Amino acid sequence: MALKLAFSPCPNDTFVFHALAHGLVKGAPPVEVTYADVDVTNTAAEQGEFDLVKVSYAALPWLLDDYELLPCGGALGRGCGPLVLTRQDGPQHLDGARVAVPGDRTTAYLLFRLWAQGQQPAAIDVVPFHEIMPAVAAGRYDAGLVIHEARFTYPRHGLTALVDLGEWWEGDTGLPIPLGAILAKRGTVDPAAATEWIRDSVRQAWANPAASRDYVLAHAQEMEQAVVDQHIGLYVNEFTEDLGAEGRKAIEALLGRATDAGLVPQISSSRATAWSS
Image (tube, rainbow, N blue to C red; front, side, top):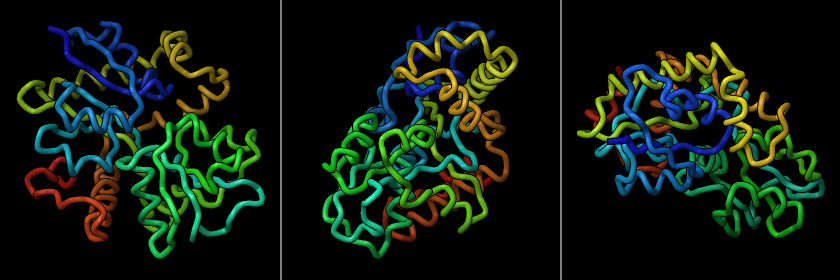
């Protein structure tokens, strides 16, 4: 029986999972792939819909009873944080502003809430990621929270960055930004085996980048090759192969701060061992 695997159509995910999705990983079972924005997978994972799933680290407090965090395949890094964008003549603070965000359990939004403490936006609306920059440019929102390839394309929309939340996080903590996590469903998937499948898929992607190119571009939402290459180069890094001690420390810092601020539920110590050990 095929495992149900869900990840986004973004280039970093299709690059990482190309080999696994195409039956090129020795010993791995066949997989049935669902492509969905991370805000969708965060919600679907809470319903137990997938065996392996890419979610936001910010969503872990709601998911770890049913899923186990894997130490590979996700997105952590430096210089890759979310941006808060405004028009050139936009606000310099968010008091009274209308803000578009890509999801209420995304890591981007959690970082935004940690950074924006003390500011009082008039409204926060969840908007599909691809609609945020055009909506801010058109004046429907005063600011927008964006991720991924928007780092490379926002000037085309006449927008400016009010804050780079990655720079803020790294400057405040000295740690990389934990963005997306890979989870395995408890009682359904052997986490040790799944870790090896995904690591093999990552290593194959690095060893032969051209093999996944058509697949990546087919799902890249009309991004040109240069932007796709920048996207992969930024978000697929040493943390994708293994979280390591620094990656685990970053996760602990993010969720610890969020818990202390009352933004996410407390995670039991037994569930937190995935990044604290």
